[in-house]
Image (cartoon, rainbow, N blue to C red; front, top):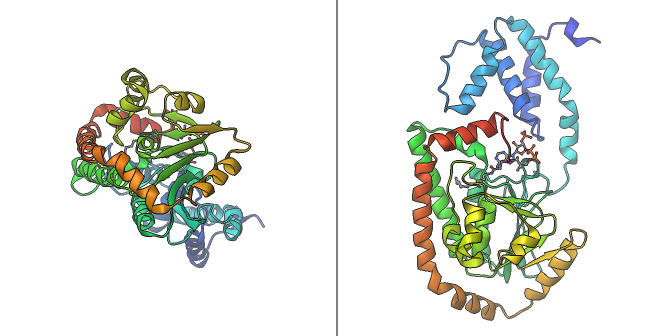
Length: 364
Ligand SMILES: CCCCC/C=C/C(=O)SCCNC(=O)CCNC(=O)[C@H](O)C(C)(C)COP(=O)(O)OP(=O)(O)OC[C@H]1O[C@@H](n2cnc3c(N)ncnc32)[C@H](O)[C@@H]1OP(=O)(O)O
């Protein structure tokens, strides 16, 4: 039957609202905005809210979507809402068939899959559809997972990514949910979060290994300077486009990168945003070893399992001997980097870069 020829009842509308709540597969921002706008139009009529400010990105996008419906009658909006939800049914059906580990809650984490086996705790970034961008929830979950791993009976801890990316770095939508205190409060909260987050890596007591399965961007790259070993697929790339984003280095990279790869090479990466291949990153000392992508997982995990059979106390103590002289310095660097970034996040350069990405005008 042609659904557009009939009028959806209030009951149809309510059923559709319930169906939306059951969607496990994210339908994407565009569809969510359409649903929001149609819901508001169907229940309240034409947009009656004051236009939000330019920096209030999320509310501005919602307002735009609702306002774009003009004087569409409530009944038509209700029908369009019902039709749109019914067109999403494939994602409703497939929600029960999502592969384990693909955007599904696992072991108490929403954004990670954390497993412990063969003496190895594996913390896997699990937002593959968003290229494992690190949102606020994920920052908190990574800290929680690291704290648990530091106390569990595993010997080594591994970070890796699910899907084609290791991680695309900070989720740029982190800048959009502005608290009542405005953008200054947001920048301050982010600086506090970042300092605590990086601090967990500085203080992590067991061998910490990155298995870089694909491209890495921003903070997922800078943190590598705090890992004890970095294994990379030859598909991986390493990109820190801070200047392009109106931002500045973090993750202690302003200190670790010049030491690891020479000040001149660090400058190319951290200031000019040069993207390195896995081979180049290895030649410059950021990556321990590169493996062909076809054998990457097999070779790396065989090696890691052998490492995890070594005497745990010797591993811990050796790490402590190697790292302890630097710890105080690293905390001071971390504090300074967060402080500088707090200012950068309030700059026009940064705001424009984030707005351009979110409005799909730019990509790296
Ligand atoms: C609070 C502490 C702050 C700490 C400071 C940290 C700083 C950094 O990490 S700076 C680096 C920030 N990262 C970026 O600027 C990367 C932005 N992303 C991109 O340029 C591209 O997405 C890409 C090159 C990483 C991948 O391009 P492509 O293969 O064409 O894939 P899509 O762009 O279509 O991505 C799929 C999907 O994922 C969303 N997404 C990817 N990365 C991010 C991100 N970093 N933040 C937010 N969203 C991201 C992308 O928007 C797509 O979403 P949908 O359109 O909804 O499918």
